[in-house]
Length: 80
Image (cartoon, rainbow, N blue to C red):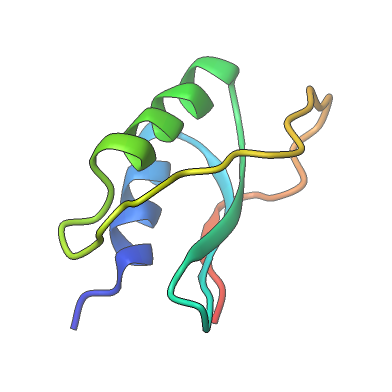
């Protein structure tokens, strides 16, 4: 079985991003991305236009963006 988060995790790792992703009970996905701004923007575009093969994207919202000095995570995880 393939969950949407697994493809997102693979894409995040490919881009060298860290953070987490979680499927919600409402059928949405939430998470946090950290890394170079160009890579984060690339991931945002991927999420808005493509996403996981089994996903259906109605809308992508990105909030609480800020510049950080140090990464809070060391890898990209799927939270259950």
